[in-house]
Length: 183
Figure 1 (cartoon, rainbow, N blue to C red):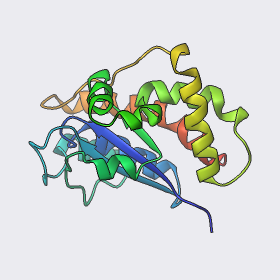
Figure 2: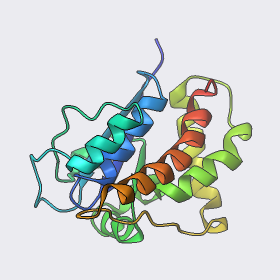
Figure 3: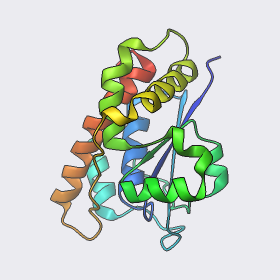
Figure 4: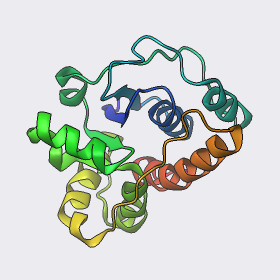
């Protein structure tokens, strides 16, 4: 049996960007990658994701059902091998509250570029081995990459959610390829 690799997707309220990121990567990877999400704010805790986010995911073939917003906790952070944040503000929040997690926390759009560049250098092995090697290599090369934020579509028109979904697919496809080396 292959070991699991856990990816935590983080944004502000866990109702737009992080659930979209979670569901997109989940749709691109198999059962050996556990995707989950949380928000740095508890304001929307327990709510479903935004309707435009759900509609956009469904139109692209991803499953939007069953989401409930969660507030980020230490348990979420500690249970994750990789943390993908939407903005530098989210990175700073995590660094301030969970400094031990900085080495495994990246901007989702930046990490996608890193994964594309580093995939060929990863060792053979299961997803956990490849994933942990990817995170370590990305941490070593962090300074070589520009920080690219993911804009907040909350309250915007559906077309903006479409742009966010495209940016997430572009960023997460190389991550899935690097982890699974089969897509």
